[in-house]
Image (cartoon, rainbow over all chains, first blue to last red; front, side, top):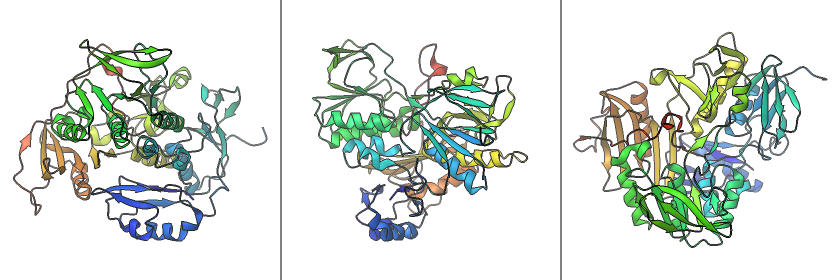
Amino acid sequence: MRVVVDLNRCQGYAQCCYAAPEAFELRGHEILFYDPAPPEEARPRIERARLACPVRAISVEPAALAGEDAP
Amino acid sequence: MSEKPGIVIVGASLAGLRGAEALRRGGYDGPLTIVGDEPYGPYDRPPLSKHVLAGELRPEATTLPQLYPLRARWRLGHPAIGLDRPGKSIRLADGSVIPFAKLLIATGARARPWPGEGAGLGGIFTIRGRDDATALRQALTAPPKRVLVIGAGLIGCEAASCCRDLGLPVTMVDPNPTPLARVVGTLVGETLAGCMRRAGVDYRPGAKVLSLAGEGGRVRRAHLQDGGAIETDLVIIALGAVRDTAWLAEGGLMADSGGLTCDGTCRALGRDGEPDPDIYAAGDVARWPNPLYGWKPMTVEHWGNAVEQAAHAAGNMLRPEDPQIYTHLPAFWSSQFGINIKAVGLTDGADSVAIVQGSRAGLRFLAVYGRAGRSIAAVSFDQARWLPAYADRILAGAAFPPILDAIDQSRIETMAPGFPGPRPGPAAKLQPRESAHV
C-alpha cells in the first residue's frame, strides 16, 4: 500500500508513531521517517495513524485504488 | 480517432498526479492522458536524497499514492518533444501525436549537470530521479574512498549528511561562505556549517571546483580554483536545476531554461504575451506572478507548490469563465545532520534576521527574516511547531519581528542575515535558483 506524509504540515506530534510504530518513526526532535510502502496487512494501523494525526498530514491510497488505476 | 480530445497532462510526477486528481475530483469526466518521460508512475522525490541514499528505502518504495480514481491513459517513458498550438496537439519522442482540448504542463525540472571539464567521466552523479538515486546508492555501497559534493544547497547538504551517516569520507566544496547561504543567509548557515564539521564533513567554503580529472574513464580528482586538488572517486553534482522547455518555446510559448511563463491564473503565455486559454502550467516548471511578492514572476521548486499549484491550475481549467489568481507562500523542509529544517516565505532581499525562539547555540531555534520592516520569511531548526504562527504573520505582511510576547522569548536582537551577492558572470540572471527538493 502507498502512503505519503506532507512534511510541510507535519509538526512532529508523533501520534502516527504510536498508532503504527513499524511504519512511522520520529528521529531526533522532529524528523519523521516513515515507510511509504508498508505491507497491505498493516492497513488498519496505518489508517489509525492517518486518523490520529492532529495536523492531517498523512495521505493513504484507498485499498480500492491500489493497483487498479495504476499506470 | 474514436474519441474527442480531452485533457492532456505532460509530466507524471507529483504535480501531474495531483493535477489529475483535482480534475477528476472537480468533476471532469472526459478523456485524460498523462505523459511522462520516465518509465515510472508518479513517485516522491524528497526521500531520494535522504532515505534512498541511506539504503533505508528501496527506490521503488517512493511510488506516490493515488488518492482519487483517475481513469487515465498513461504514456510513460515518452518525453513530449513538440507542441502544435494551432493544431492543438503534442508530439512525443516516439513520433506519436496526442491531440488535446486542454493541456497542463507539469514537466518539472532536471538536475543541472556538471558544466565543466570532465563531465563524461564515470563516478559523477546528480540526484533528481529514481534512476539517479538507484545508481548513486549502488555506487556508495562500493564503497568510494572519498565522496566529493559540489554545491552546498539543500540537495548537496542532504547527500553529505547521508554519506557521513554511512561512514564515508566526504568533502564538500561551495563558493559561498556557508551552506544554504542563498536560502537562509550566512548567519543561520554558519550554524549548519558547525553541524556539518562536527559530523566530520571536510567542508570547504569559498572554494570552487574548476575541473574534474580521471583515469581510465573514471573520476580521480577535482582541481580547485586556488590551485589545490581533491582526490575523489565519487562526485555528487548538486548545482540546482534547469528546465527542459525548448519544445514549448519552439511551440510559441514564452519559455526558457528558467521556466514556462504564465499569468496569475496559471495560463501559459504565448510569445506575444497573451495567455493561451487552453494551456496551463504547474509545479517547478511554472513561472507565475505571485501576488504575495508584488506580482514578481517566480518559480517555486518545492513539494508544496507542486501540490497546490497543480490543484489550482486544474480548478481554473475546469472553470475558465472564472479564473482564480494563484497565491502561494513557499515552504520547504529538509532533514540533515539530525536536524529538521523547515522554512516558509522567501528570504530574497532580506535586510535583517532575528532569532525569535530558542538559540543557535542550542541548535533549536526559529529565525525570522525582515525586509524594510516587514516579515518575509521564517526558518526553523527543530522548532517546527512555531512555524505556522509565523507563516500567518508573513502572509499578512506583519511588521518585523512579528511576535514579541511569546512566553519563552529572550531579548530579540536584529542582525544582518548575510546573503551572498549576485552570482558572478554574464550568465548570472540565467542561473537557476538553488534547487530545493528533488
